[in-house]
Image: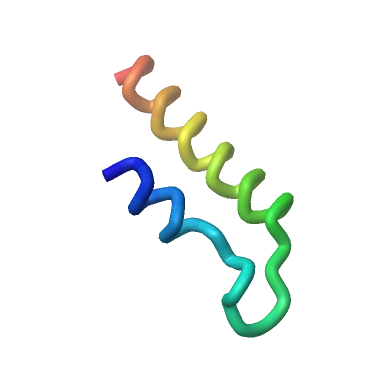
Length: 41
């Protein structure tokens, strides 16, 4: 299963321009916000 997820998130063959740094930043912000909401109830 983890290998399938890793393949699903690679964008080397995706059409159009891909900004991996921006995508990583947005995902990280999303995760941090979710964890903060869980912690603070």
